[in-house]
Length: 122
Image (cartoon, rainbow, N blue to C red):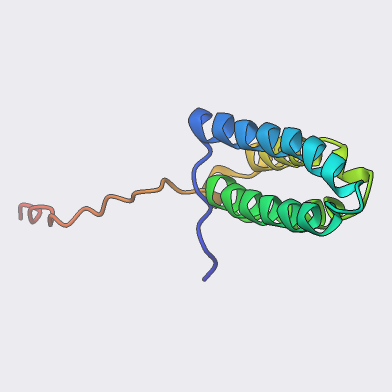
């Protein structure tokens, strides 16, 4: 049985966009550091750490989506990593999740009814 995706709420979507914007903005100074000979290795490391953390947060907020993997890989390509790939990824994943049938998503908490209905009169 597959894992149930978290319910898309306005707060989850806003938080996912906020994290994506921060991650994409952080790419600019990291890329600037990478373009120096001294900062190349620390810049690549920082870039990778940011992308791993963002991918984990996005999976937690929106549920796993295959597009998170190419976004992570695209961030490793020089010059492409300055594009707002995480914001684009969040937009696409939210759009896709909203198109899914309601049965594919479930609330983060599930209430189980344990009471037994009274017997039918004879």
